[in-house]
Amino acid sequence: MDKEILIILLICIVITIVSIIAAVYQYYQSRKILYRINRMLEQAINGVFTEMDFNESLLSEVESNMSKYLSASEVSAKNVEEEKKMLHHLISDISHQTKTPLANIKLYAELLKEADLREEDADNAERLYRQTDKLEFLIQTLIKMSRLESGILKLEPAGYPIQNVLDLLGQQYTAIAEQKNLKFKIIPSDVEAVFDEKWTVEAVGNVVDNAIKYTDSGRIQIRVKSYEMFCCIEVSDTGRGIRESEMGSIFGRFKRSSDVKNEDGVGIGLYLAREIMQQQNGYMKVKSEYGKGSVFQLYLPRN
Image (tube, rainbow, N blue to C red; front, side):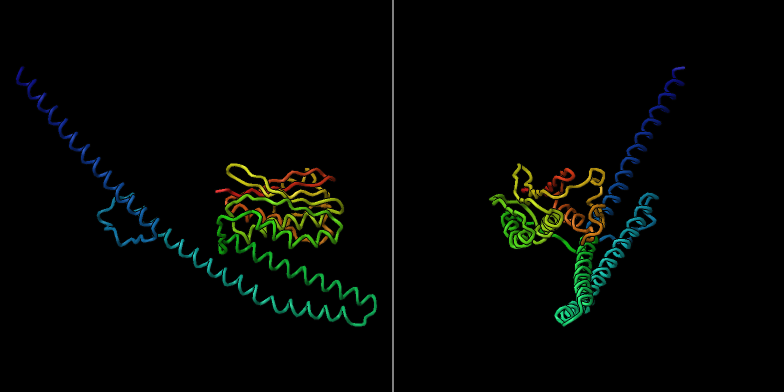
């Protein structure tokens, strides 16, 4: 009886030892597989992954599938990069090829305006000039939008005084506002933030342009508010305001208020402004009361 018990104990001990060895072996095999997969991912992140780095006969099924996936991802990334390059060339060609015809049409329209024409023909020449100007603006805006959306155009934020933006806005829009007999006030600021100067002027300028366009009387004011992490460029006006039902769509592409559909404009300005802000870690907000004016706030990071 004692002998049988001893044999059973020995068998249990052997089984336990074998189980421990198997578990340890499985543990190290799993670590080995995870290490290989981790190495694949690191190489893929660094852009140096090649399927030839791995011996198919030594890989587990998971490793093999991961290798195939990463190889396919590498090819896909290269295709995306090639498509971006092609898109960049296409946009550049469109920009280049349309400049000369549009410039010539505007020139001929100006010559017609200066000629001794009947009143009806003079009106047609004026309309031709305005529509050509509108077409030129639309093409250039679409090109900017395409470059931003496709990632071809990269913003380069750096530390600048906000006053740089305010000065440029004053130079561009003071005379335009005065032509409509609007009070145009820019409050100086000593705040600094991180932004791309050229494109931030473009973004805020789109908001100011809309404010002037849709304000028939009163004032337009630009001021800067400073917070711990952000600064805010605030553009307020006493214009027509925005209907509550349209507040959720004003930043969409080609979105225009039902009140201004018959006026000049293409509905890209606010969309482009928000896109520019988002690409430099900023954002936009708007408050408006229909018939009493609007306040647009453009937030830029301080650091």
